[in-house]
Length: 294
Image (cartoon, rainbow, N blue to C red; front, side):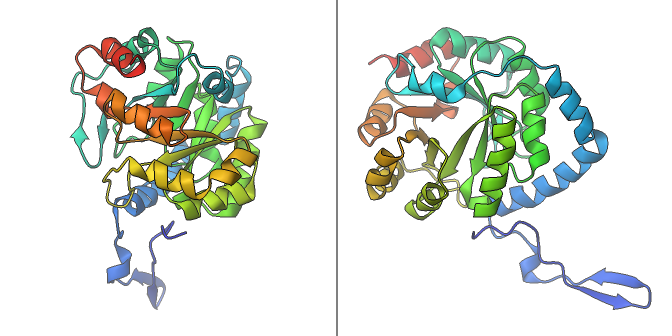
């Protein structure tokens, strides 16, 4: 794992006081590391505000979970579309000024989306678990909580807010993390979309096993640049293993036209995750229909 989970923090002790020693490695090396370090801080604060026991009580009273994976497998669209609700991103800033997540979700449902993805990161994407809860209360589609999940507590947050699935990013998690978070998610009935960016990460996930839904992110999370041929390269390198484990492959990011979607479908993706291309449209439902229907 190349992404450091926490900043190095060498200290010097003088009498009864400790002082951090500033140095070059104290700063994040890329955007993803910056997000991960901030996420650790956010989770610490959230735990103090809302104890795990409170989340568990809320989950017990929540509605029955929807089968995210099965919805993708049985979709009438080829590929199935996971439409994303995202106000902003670190690389593009605010994507949609008139951001009304409920109306966007309704538009996606009318436009034919199979599932929805909801950004819950506040600091960098201006999302939140409150956004997820609002969407859950108004649409019946299966929902993916899209966040930078590092701790079991976040899995409970997602389920309590109404998620049917969570995103796990291989680049920021060890094999042990993936196994443990999978165990927690499975106990709550959540589907898991594991995100990879290269063949090495994909092989790691395949070696662990038990992840039938895998996303190939065409966006380099260190530079945030996109290239849809990444789906082709990664899927090609692991084609045999993907078929043997009956993996449903999702292509994520950098998809703006029907031609883009047809291209990644030819690479083996049976679902796509599309956000920015739709979020910038005045008529979201119509824009989605144009992407789905050739």
